[in-house]
Amino acid sequence: MINKKSPIPIYYQLQEQIKNMIEKGELKPGDTISSERQYAEKFKISRMTIRQALTKLVDEGYLYRVKGKGTFVAERKIEQPLQGLTSFTEDMKSRGMKPGSKPLSFEVIPASSSIANHLAIQEYGPVYEIKRIRLADDVPMALETTYISANLIKGLTEEIMINQSLYEYIEDHSRVKIDQAEQIIESSIADQMESQYLKIKKGLPVMLIQRKSFSEDGTPIEFVKSVYRADRYRFMIHMKR
Amino acid sequence: MINKKSPIPIYYQLQEQIKNMIEKGELKPGDTISSERQYAEKFKISRMTIRQALTKLVDEGYLYRVKGKGTFVAERKIEQPLQGLTSFTEDMKSRGMKPGSKPLSFEVIPASSSIANHLAIQEYGPVYEIKRIRLADDVPMALETTYISANLIKGLTEEIMINQSLYEYIEDHSRVKIDQAEQIIESSIADQMESQYLKIKKGLPVMLIQRKSFSEDGTPIEFVKSVYRADRYRFMIHMKR
DNA sequence: CACATGTTGTGGTATAGACAACTATATTTA
DNA sequence: TAAATATAGTTGTCTATACCACAACATGTG
Image (cartoon, rainbow over all chains, first blue to last red; front, top):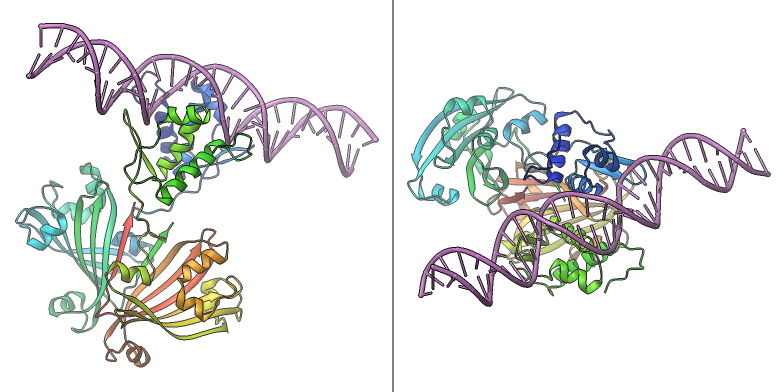
């Protein structure tokens, strides 16, 4: 279970093991975990080292301690990636609607100066340009255009876009983790093309949403422009802390 | 400096002292703080106890450590209250505009069922209803109506509203700390009254923003309905982690 | 029976010391 | 001079121990 000779710190090994058990559901919210002294005994490790592992998990919200009683598994964190800035898919699910996506185009194009600027890459550098219609219960909800640097995320294909969450693909196939995002929301009026795709009348108000997502080190990962029909969509945000 | 006989834990005393020095500016970003052994020597405290204090501050983002070099004061956390959900005043300042406010009405009224529901109070319970025009560079930007339970925050007057930030007043005059918020943003069309106050043509698109703010324990504190003119306002959000 | 009192087990705080890993600087060596 | 080596100082990890405060349960006492 614990390898004392490993270069990986003991407290870290234990910490990850417990975290995994929680995430796999082997430990459920409300469960009591072994006491610090029991862990120390079981693994022949000093209690202070055990505490180092547990303290980290308490700080991260996986566990909570009660003096005199024990240490317990906390309620699962509902914390979505990006606290409240959910993907379209998750967003629609949480509203009780069936999310869908209809691809319009998938290309690798040279970055315009604006796109290059947003993604912090060289002008004319290769970027994926992905256009999609987003559906909720099969009704068009938004027109979405995504830009991602092709040098950063390689091997993206149209099929992946259809079958998998883009965020998942990025986290699985590269070392980057999307960690923060900037959004700009504004009201506008549907133009010819937009009204056509969204099946609304030209001139009706739409919500224009621009999202830029960044990795932990501040590198821009994706730049998304969406046009939502304002008559059917409300943008909801929940922010904590 | 450190009182070993105090019932307040030593690590906590040190932790708060360093935090204060950072917040007062006595320690500036980039500064090296004393090494762990120096603190231990100075206060005649075990190094492990010093580490307990510093580790907490590192986790909270006040400090960062570099192995072999020392422990440093981190860049100030730009973290606004509610990470990116700033008040109108702060919002406008950050856009380089002069924020202003023109009071329209200030009353204590019985809560309608909708308001009572939002604030989790009894129907017909007393609530402040505060209507204001929000100005940016003296140009009307939004029409804002705020509801706050009069039982929760007492002694609010119209003058306070004009001269002071509402958030500041609440945090100074009660034990509640605004900790999270829910916002709903939608597009709509200006009605007669709205167009009049905002000095735009009736029928032009506006952004309707509802904000509900909560304290740490989940009690709703305020409920705000704002109507922003869409031609001059863009809603920006920055979310971390 | 009801109440006080121990006893045991839990997390919370604190100590003193050890060695590892890393950085920077000074010193020695080729 | 340039490169290797030692040295001192830093944070990182870990141990073994001690005592405190709190919770739960058993036990004794009135």
